[in-house]
Length: 172
Image (cartoon, rainbow, N blue to C red; front, side, top):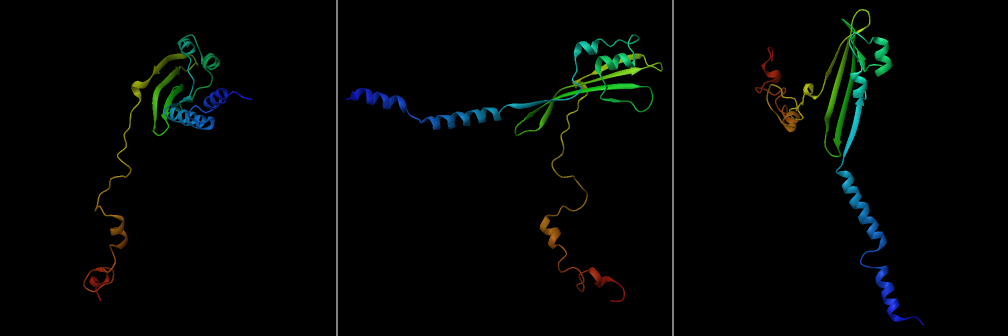
């Protein structure tokens, strides 16, 4: 025969308040809420390496050595002297918000006519502009009318005698 105190203790330890499925649902909901507060980080363009970027020296390197060290550029100049651009941008986006640029780097490598590096120039976040659009509509000149005024505004005025429309034309 079983001891009654052991049966009571076994029941208490099996159900101390919430069932196992309720606990799992609670933990899953809490994890989802915490995950929703994190931001999504994204790297776009060239993934820069500071040591490799510093190794490019004017007068020493040429087009081939730059390509072997850094790889193909993000884009090149189309006119004028040859310039290679390596563009790197890191963004951070929140789940319900917009994305923000957290790091930006543009490295320009200027080459002379012989294909040797003439100058290396690097810029960062100081040239990034923050643009704040003016709402969701474009401001225009003219009367500000609602949708219903646009829809029903001409009812009764087209072709009615004395009210405009065809009434003011010669021969009527």
